Image (cartoon, rainbow, N blue to C red; front, side, top):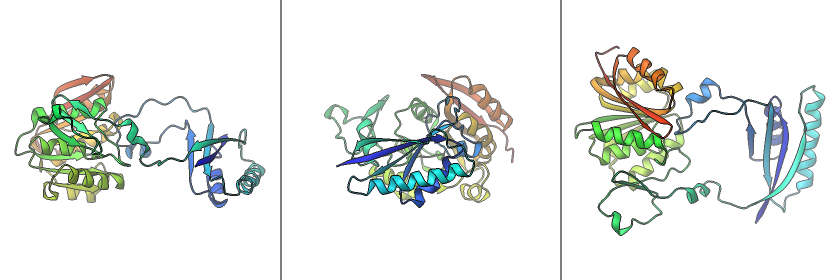
Length: 322
C-alpha cells in the first residue's frame, strides 16, 4: 500500500503552532525539517556518533504528514488549510504556506534502517547485526552482535572504532568500566567481551536502556556483569550517586566535544586515581579543547588517536579532585 505524503512549507517561527494545529486536525504524526541550530540542552541529549555542522538557518521549515488513501484526505487537508489561515490571521508569518502532495511506499519505519547495517570488522573483532549469519571464515573472530533498534550506535562510525581500540589497549581483567552515553551498549559489550570485570552504562534516552539490555542478552552477557542507568551524569546528582565516586578503572564517552568539556569533572569524580578516560566523538580541530578540559579536571592526557576526520583523546586521572 502507498501512503499519501503532504509537505507544508512554512517558517521555523510558525512550526510549533502549525504542528499543534495539525495534531488538533487528527494527524497522528509529523516530520519537521528546518535549519534551526540546536540549543545547548538539545545537544546535551544527543549522545551520537556524528553531529555534523549544520547549514545556516534560512528560516524555512517543512512539515510533513502521511495519510492513508482510504482516509478522507480532502477533509484533513481542508482542516489544515483552515488552521493555517487562522494562524496567519494572528499576524504570524507562515511563509509560503503551500502544501505539496506525493506518494510513498508503506514501509516498516522502525526497521527500515536494517538495510544499511551489515557486518564489518574492527581489527580482528567482527561486529554484525543478529539477523546476519557468521561466515565460516569468521568463526575464530571475537563476535559482537548489535541491533541498535531506536538507540544510537552500530559501531560502524570511526569514533566508536577509535574507542574500541583504546579500550582494548588499556583494559585488564579487573576493569570496572563506566560507559557514558552508552547508546546501544556496544562499547560496554566490547569491553566485557574483551575481558572487563563489570560495566555500568548511562544514557539520556530510555530507548538506550532497552537496546543495551537486549544486546547484552544477544551477546550472552549475564545481567550481573552490567548495569544501565537513565539520566545525565553531568548535572544529575541522583545519577552521580548511583554511578558512584572513585569506583571505576576506566570510563569511556563517545559523545561530542561540546559535551565532553562539561562532562570532564563528573567523569573524574567517578574514576579511581589512575583510572583511564577514553573520549571520542571529537571532530579533528576540537581535540585540544577537550584535552584542556580534561587537564583542568585533573587528568593527564596520554595520547590522541585519529581515524578519518575524528579524534579520540585518552587520559589518566591524577589526584582526586572531588
